[in-house]
Image 1: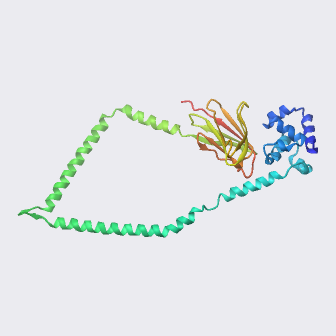
Image 2: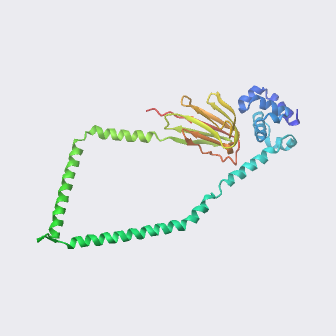
Length: 307
């Protein structure tokens, strides 16, 4: 047992807490808590979780985390900080300009030339069409019969006016014949469409804990996925765990759980940098940036709308 493990164990026993009690408080498995006390970090899900678990342990038993990390820094692996720096670097790299942009810029002059040629052809065609129409209008005599252009245009305008009047009368008749109930049904349908817009908003956010509210949703389907490697624990509001373990690309990459019959879902995220959360297909935006708080506790309350 290391000096750090012995100090943590003494603080736990001083508070009268068992490992089972501590597991309920921190949501960390008992075997990991026991490994911290014994200094056996090889059993952890990953070296970058060691400092996060020790911090949770210290919070639960009332110890000063900064003082503890300073006094026992020799007993704590440093691989966590190195892993965090690698992932922060990888996040920044993703923000660089896509490689395909240069290819688009190379093709841009050719595209502009093509558009110019097409525009020129269209203008020539339009000019030729106008000339042909003018020639046809000048030919007003055929087989000794003269046709007055003005009379033709007046006749056409008269027929158009009659058609418009007939259509307006038909529309007025349809409006009068439409029952008032249909108008009410249309308004009710519009209201139903407005109600079905899902709302997922932050209620509170403090430290590593954030609470959201899900409204205007007919169901509550939760999906937790990873873009690298992360440890997660997915529970309901009563503390029942639906999944606890590692999500890893190339192995178990995601977990989808239906919480429609629950009022609350709790997601303990060990590595928020590599963890994505979806609610009914909508991606949840972290209120606390993952680069500032790697380990986060997310609570989502499902508010059922009574119709």
